[in-house]
Amino acid sequence: MAAASAARAAGRRSRRLFDIFVAEVPWTVSSKELKEYFSQFGSVQRCQLPFDKDTGFHRRYCWIKFSTPQDVQNVFQKDPHILEGAKV
Image (cartoon, rainbow, N blue to C red):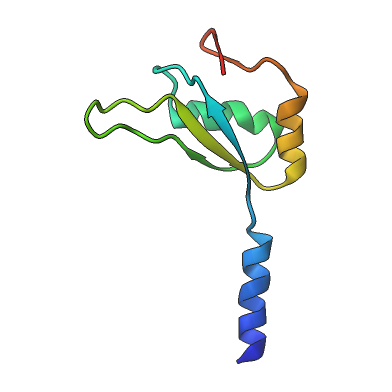
């Protein structure tokens, strides 16, 4: 029983994600496009782009989740980040 619990805990640690917050995302950019863009810096595990229930539009910010802290550092090495003509 203890071995199974230790294996689950090790699995959770190995799935740790490192995220960045991205603001000023243009209205026309989708989560797929964001994931594709940020994939050039490392392995993107998830892109969370929240939507407003009332308007149906996204809220112009998102979280990009990477596999390693080095992936995040790779993002910060490039400045600025331009998507559809807008700096994010």
